[in-house]
Length: 604
Image (cartoon, rainbow, N blue to C red; front, side, top):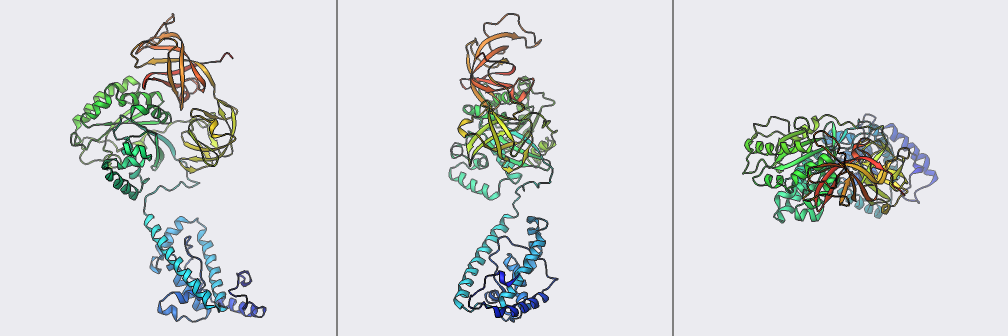
């Protein structure tokens, strides 16, 4: 580095006559450089580089203080001090190099070596014409000491955090892992959030320190068993009451897959939120409590175990894992009899809902609080021979999704953050940065400014991924949950009137034309009215009645015409199942499930 490029320590000393002598000293320093020195490992947190002239006075070891003023001597000092500045001694150098090389890019080491060379030359050059002003020297030394202390503290913190098993962001050239969305459903207090928190801890997504902090806070509120659920229940109200309200989101990774946990609320007041969570899921985990009395409460009429299983099936979840939780409870104590009792009661109901017990349902015992049978098998449970929960998730067959189809992204939520941000799961097609899309049913043309898949920025996204999109060309107020992002060439259908096949599940009285209910279709919630009953359908034969029915009652199947209060996005079940199935709810109960058969154009 040319000495003229560096700022002189004192303008009085900088004279043209001195230039040749400095050049001579510089060439001597370069000639005496140790070419076999260890490669310089850059420390990104290191303090500002201080010339060797200052370092000889700051370090209090005997050989350094008596160092001669020749360039080679000053370089040796710099060499011995560099590792200390990097936060370790000469013996630690090897391990230090390894950790930094992992963090740096492959060609970072070479650049560091050149940099080191330049800095040593600079040090030698400055050593020749040192500053005469003692006050400047003392001030700079004080600053350097402070920076060194700060640096050491930062390095200690960093060393502490290194062993944490955090999942590193995927390398750009690494193959993309398959995305699977898992929704945890079940009765209130079955242990859904606790299992979610335990899985995050076991897979290294939550640090031990954070959980210890939650444990302390939970103990202060006399709720020590709730601390794991706080990893997913981040809202203060949820933590105080111990009940999930919003659908909690988190994610974890295994060798082959990237899983998104959707922690649905179990309370009957928050079933609409649960439907929104289930509509994004590929796979449902039904959590039931094996504790005496708790399973029975959840499974009885009015319990959420039944309703959630049915809603998951309606939302399009094909595979169901039933986790029999709280097996470590003193009333159960890993009893096979209790496990079989729960299984016998559940299987007939799940079969009735539409799951195939042989293919679609898998039962497994576990304990969310202790983490037994989630990652490792349980020694106390000798009768269960299957895989633990996380290994079982990994062994499931792949989900088939078409990335060639039209773009369909139902909006789950939206907010303002340096622009308009929308959240949703990409059901079909693929989205890339700077792509032009259309927001239906308002037909706003928008541009994708940035794309985050589970909080990791990416340039393109495939079906099944949970995305956050920052959009240009639309205001946050103009978007509602249930709107759909489509590509301009292939817009989704929107309208108010449609014909659908409906199964009445639970309704005390009869249902006639003019009946109002709340429609839940994909992420959209809208009020609808049954305007006409077209025909009844025989459950066994599938035959349609010739005459129009005047009413329908519980357990009957009918085809009806429905009219929504506002324009909604929907598709026929045959064309696009994810946007063609729906549930009807009234007075806090699910009264019917159905599928869209035909879209009726509005007579405007």
